[in-house]
Length: 574
Image 1 (tube, one colour):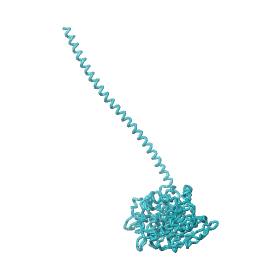
Image 2 (tube, helix red, strand yellow):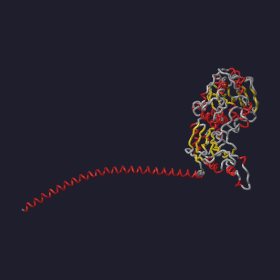
Image 3 (cartoon, one colour):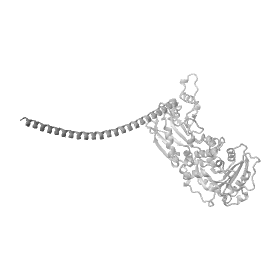
Image 4 (cartoon, rainbow, N blue to C red):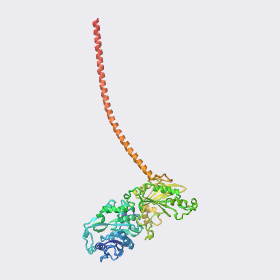
């Protein structure tokens, strides 16, 4: 029974202790080389002293056009071959070695890397535990003088020859930040660094060979495709190796990133930060939407989905907030009847309209059958004609019945849900009725279904294997904006005008907020002024009260004085 690993949590596996087990898998060590015969001699001397059985090891050295041609040194593994690859480029050389390899596991090794004598065994113990692993050793970069190959072959600990050395700082940081690649499984493919990495050969057959169109970044791009093929990535600290001198990236990181990012952006959709343009298309899209007939053709005369249904769905998908998308329309496109005299009577008129309407839309493709849920599962090897093209591993696929229309942001929201939570399958309940039963859409993660195809048991539903390894979630279609009828589409000009109107309203709102703030300040000032006036009024009232009292006293005094004067006058008259 094949072991099931959830996400990238390889810690559920228990590999055997070094030197305490009996291996059975054969390993092919592929060493692309260009010049530097002295370093190649040391790399082969390191391989000659490995603890992994020589009878299960083959070494293929690929001379990539060296002048003078490379030769095999005296100290080398018993089963070592030298082949030529005149086409320049490490990717071409590796692919040549891959074609010549016969092992169950492919171990990439650069010609300037010397392996610790237990390194291959440390790799291979993991590959015996599960057939879909990618194992990376720990490289250290040494400035030491090159020793004699005989010293390397006889050394029990290479540290005595090559330390002090620098670690692979970027890789160590990635491993530490992600809990050994278990906390963020969707970036684990970045571990695939070709200096000293091993891959299950059957898994590599599923992913395809190295992309020879790339100038740099081939290792990362292949790691991405291996992830889509279901790989689990394992960092192995016991697989130690020494790189003779610094790497190109250590010397020129900024220029290397500049060149690498220009190419890998087209091929690795997971690097979302490299795809910031709001409208352009890429070689490998982030999402493929498969528009399927609402009901599979079954009765006489049923020829696939209707023009109106398909157009409603496709137009809504292409007009959404996710530009990084392609649409595949399923139908019997090889059986469309030609009717030149009476086109309105053509029994395949709707199919002809669909194909004609989208014939020149680069984001719409036509297929006779629904794309496979996952790649071929073992047994291996995979036939040559079924191997995928390099770089064509779309990470998500949405299967959507024709006639169902996502709102503008529906696909982006659904992808955020699947990506943030790591689900392998998000099933969307669109409708449930007595006539058609349950109608659903399915967002499938390619890596999850590829993994499930490897570990699925006989008679087991593939969705159950996906649930075990990545998780399955059901959501309501209406909640995520899936509607059963066409909606008005906001064109690019309309969207621009809407954004401009929002910007204008935002600016106006800012102005009004400023006015409100000003009037609030003014109101506060008037409140303060009113308070002062109230205090003044109180003081005035008190002053007026005092004056009134004084006036009353004066009046009383006057009245009293006047009365006395009158009395005195009357007295004198008498």
